Length: 233
Image 1 (cartoon, rainbow, N blue to C red):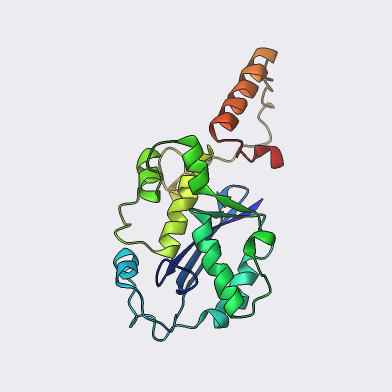
Image 2 (image 1 turned 120 degrees about the vertical axis):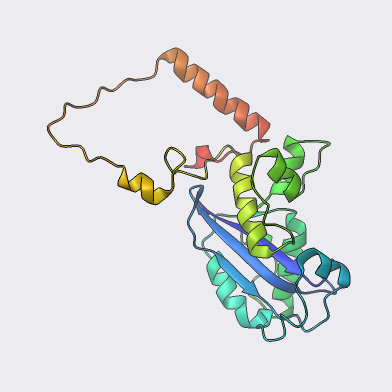
């Protein structure tokens, strides 16, 4: 299961009049962060709205020497190629802008949603937490995810944070380090076992334990609105 967590920053709110200025993507493979990310700033050839600049802090001057979308389109689509699902917060916004850029540059896809399955985490969050704030900052607070470095919006940073939020929302584990230690230290503490030791006993779950486990899975599935993924593995 290859998922791409995606975010964009733009010159304004309306895709018909505005352009993408930053794309950030984070790859999940079987719910594990791989480090194979995609990040690109893009020159829009138009002024950034003052309101948008207040959100992401990206200036026209900073983008002056960056490539246009048409120059990076093939690399971007090659990165997405083969993804089973795109995970996006408020997907209509980002997908709408990407579709508009593809149309302007005669891209190969008329609609990204016809090529990739798209999961909107904002819709998922509203189903799981009705009547509550479900923006990225609110979800970070709700799921105890550190976003202290997020003073301004940024496509790659927001994609990284959204990946953690998505995994937390769907009951996933994002850190496999042992005992709260870093990965290098944990590796140093591994003890190799010799072939002389007796085989480990295999303790199988009882019928009651299996039933309790199934009941717990069904409860998680219900809370997530049917968005769990373990049945696809």
